Length: 204
Image (cartoon, rainbow, N blue to C red; front, side, top):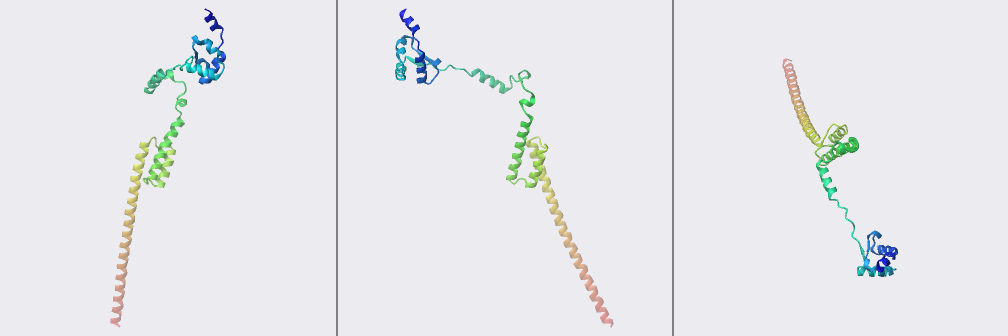
């Protein structure tokens, strides 16, 4: 009984503070051996406290576990779409998923594609600029639509180019034919003039 009274009377406040400092933890995590209170009460330096720790009279209690198992399970369920109904929503539709963020994401995707195509020489700078402005004007709703448009635009440009080349060749051909015809006409006129001159000479 006297030992219990002695234990009650002994204040270990400063010992707890020293132990917490030595063990680098909070005072609440310090455990003193209840059977060695008298010896612990005599420890008034860090060195003596280290000796008590070594002897096992003073222990740092393990940290209390705060399990995240339930939180992980809930998060996994939310990933599947559970707990996401109307009753669980706190903000407006635009607050939860801002339309500006969606716009920025779409712009970045489409502009990245255009840049990639230009660097790979799939489109020239003129078509790039035209498509860039169309992207800015909200003409293409996604990457697939833009790619289809590029494919059609390239085919159309190729057709225009081939048509222009064919037209240029036709023009050259017609020009050459006209020149030949003119040469033939000139030669014929010269021949007639020469014949007329010869006939006039013979008559005189």
